[in-house]
View 1 (spheres, rainbow, N blue to C red):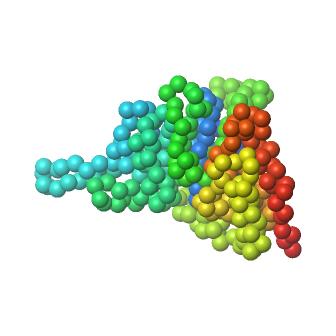
View 2 (view 1 turned 60 degrees about the vertical axis):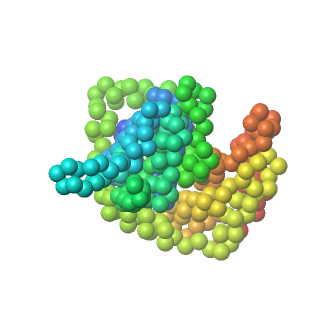
Amino acid sequence: MSKAQDVIEEVKKAFIGKDELINRVMLAVLAGGHILIEDIPGVGKTTLALAFSKAMSLDYGRMQFTPDVLPSDIVGYTIYNKNTGLMEYQKGAVLCNLFLADELNRATSRTQSALLEAMEENQVTVDGVSHPTPRPFIVIATQNPFGASGTQLLPDSQIDRFMIRLSIGYPEPLKEFELLKRKESLNLLGDIKGVISKNELIEMRKKVHSVYVNDDIYCYIINLINATRTSHYIIQGASPRATIALTAMAKASAWFDGRDFVVPEDVQSVFHTTIEHRLVYTPEAHKGIVNKQPVLNTILKNTPAPKIA
């Protein structure tokens, strides 16, 4: 766990005042998932992704998603080489360790869909030939709030592939003051050092994957997921992919806390950020008659947690 904490401390040098958010991103990275950050421009989404890539010594790629971006810009394309007489593959921007999809919801649906195979199967297919993504592979996507100029809703199939969704929000005044002072005298990202290697991250993920989950915890997770499918305020509940993601995040939480087994508190602590973005709520919830957060809080409250000795 100390290596993961070292990464967090490095990221804090450039991303100030959002410790809990940094921890959640670290858990998703350890769990092998992808991260969606929804917020207005200028709150540090790109800085956060860059800071993590540098602290973990990852090859970094970035694509600014606009309506004119093509799928081939992301996954690559084949081109004829007149010297060899062969078609040669030119790799796309997504073939890196950490890919930042900036303002993903400004691109067309066709372009957005180019990420689906990479996020789910860790490969891209161009002209019938599959090309694996490097290991480890992480997508951090940002999106502007729906309704902002030039945006469109991400499809459910895309949303469901993100392990967690986060919102950064505005910094507190004292933290913003600290940010200004440090920005005057330092290159914040330039101050970040790589504290782990790619192979070390892969080994950390293996340890997270091996964390023990009792059958009672599995049943607890399934009961929570089923409760989202039967709630009167939710039209579309969480998918089986969400069940797997919640389990993986709970394992990462346990390992990060220094345990090799999952307890109910691990599941509860990551439930909102792992599940909420996958749900489709009733019109009453969207109108604010029923707030979305209390719906999930009620599910947690009404689903009995097992007692783990």
